Image (tube, one colour):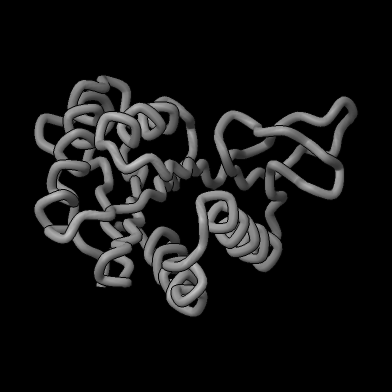
Length: 183
């Protein structure tokens, strides 16, 4: 994982842990709003534009959340997509993997998927989620070297967060995808 991805992961985990008491009791829409606020604040701190940008009532841009750098020319063009993120609150691995697949072809160095786990045996369930996501990544043939995928799991039964990551070691197809826990 490169240094930018590490800084992002560390800041995200810190922000989420600071709001954990609300995240574990909130309903789906409220949880999404919490992450909207976290990611919007982080984007502003890093000098990026955040989408969807609520004050202008813009709708989803490519994915649930995105950080972009816009070219100043008219009409505006995207200069860089910095972060692409998806939130999925349905607790089925196939539903999370479906949303996650939206992130895979996007040309962004950071890709984040946020989801919840509700079962008592959350570690076993987490392995099922990561297995589905890993299969999707292994099937994709156009990875960019060092693109980083982050999975933020909200374990509702145990009231804790876990962040996992995988960075593509090479361009093109990657044979084996193994997520690592971010500490």
